[in-house]
Amino acid sequence: MLREVLLELAEPFEISSGCTTTRRTLLLTLEGDGLEGWSECVAGGSPTYSYETVDTAWHVLARWLLPDLLRHEADDARHLASAPWLRGHPMARATVEMATWDLEAKRRGVPLSALLGGRRREVPVGVSVGIQRDADALLGKVDEYLAEGYARVKVKIKPGRDVEMLAAVRNRYPGVSLTADANSAYNLSTDLDVLCALDELSLAMIEQPLGHEDLLDHAALQRRMATPICLDESIRSAGDARLAIHIGSGAIVNIKPGRVGGLAASVEIHDLCCAEGWPVWCGGMLESGIGRAHNVALAALPGFTLPGDISSSRRYWREDIVHPEFEMRNGSMAVPTGPGIGVTPRMGRIEALTVRKEVFAP
Ligand code: OSB
Ligand code: MG
Image (cartoon, rainbow, N blue to C red; front, side):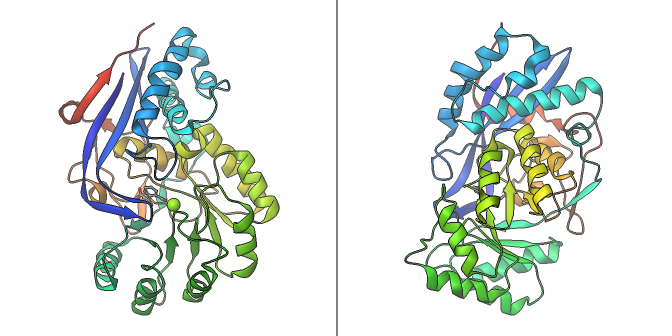
């Protein structure tokens, strides 16, 4: 069953390309052998992070991916889920792929993390702070999150809300692991002065400063900056990661299963980066507990050495849609130990938040 739920964020989340207050989210449930595999589609309501949206993902899932899956034997589901015949639409394809991983892990009675090759029992986690009005508002948020114990603070930036605001955080917290995420808001030819000023702030990394599909300018920028560049939007496949490493487009990769077409591709990128000495970490897309459970399982792999954008359920939602909710303790998130994603969807709450649903049957 494919459904759309409306989730109200605890507070608006602003990035350089737009602001989210209500998260429209697709949830997929695959049934097999009396078990249910669950996944969440990370596409947003508007095409401001990638070209995919909730509506394009619904279309691709309902018209192409789910009918194709149902025409074939369930045994092949994980292979089919990679849909080699479909061009693009990684978030839609990842939705099917990730649900088949959960179902497979439940069939085997093992945690998803173990099926993926992860052995860690807890993973280090940070928090991503949306663009704030001014330095005071930002300091207020950072104070709050550091007091809670997050292992790293990432601040969203855009032109005009960057150097000064980050410098205020750096001055108050000289030793904290601090990063900035620009979501492609800068330009190598016109913004080098700002980027060089950011380079003076001892950031642990700067995430996706330049074009959302660019690798070449990022390589040029990395040669001029001491701060490691972390790629997010620009890495859409293992091939992109190979190219980025080859030409030195940065030093770190943020892996989001939705952005790269699923968990198998995420593991492939992880393995590649590990072999090449590039650290990776697990990004986030304002997921509900369903998507977060997949992210935590992935982050249990050994190469995920840097804290992920995997925060407590209550950092996003007044109430999550899974039980138990995710809770960060001392900068870490426990990896669920039950079969599959290891958390239980709260059906009453999910039904109440559902705005459309469709059942697909052979
Ligand atoms: O660039 O990492 C990003 C949220 C929406 C779109 C893009 C990004 C983000 C975040 C949120 O940074 C991270 C999280 O889910 O905690
Ligand atoms: Mg990012």
